[in-house]
Image (tube, rainbow, N blue to C red; front, side, top):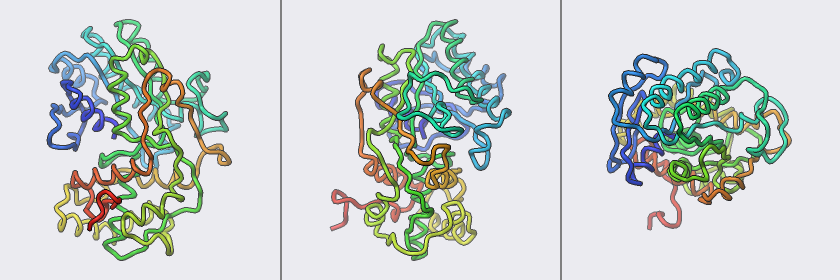
Length: 362
């Protein structure tokens, strides 16, 4: 999600963009960029690849390796080391060229240990490093060491729950919600929210976040800083669900499936998705390829499965605003826009496009 959004934002801002990833990012056709297939677990291949690239001055590192079920990998030593090595393999050769000026790396609220124990709210960047195993710390230490050796600046980002248009992502609620909506339309089922928790989220629009990374690439106020990032509001999916259902012409009332994961794993829904994809000319007829693990992530979020269940995990974004970036967006508007973006990219069918007063059919 972040990589694709960054490609678009930097390209539109006039940068020459090279995207390194396993798969070419699916973005609008008017976005000019070069794509290079890369396996970040292969150190030799990464070193050779860097030697073939044009001079790289700025890096947005948005890669992550996750395991099935997501949460087990967050504490698995082998998975933590794998993620640490992936950054080293690409940042080391890039830094040695002497061309790098700025690097953005990604963390999140797990940096505060929120997935392991109660935390003090709101979460602030000034808090001391939480003492737990996390690839975030491997990334941060590597980046700081390379920056000291080679003289580039860096920004560490801690976004909350991301909303984007990329398929196959580990954690993109838009894909899970959009696929669920399309299948409910197809099968005449109620669009009832699974789960019983009332979870309060702070959302992050991937496109807004990419704008912030464009700002940070040259802003002195962002150099060597850590920033929390959110859309600027609070969001409860359960409270937004009736409005979302109405905009999708779906009924939010009725018997809910046990979970998003259970519903989307049903072979009947996989078959229905293939039929939708063939009829609508979608790019991906494999439902799993659209979802990644986003449905699992939705269930983790919607069940409120965090260490401190009695309080929402809120972060302070005052530091970023005082540094000079004040962009914001209504999170329900963000969700609707990202659903529409996935429709425009032919990743979701037209039935998953929310109708608002501005685009409702006459």
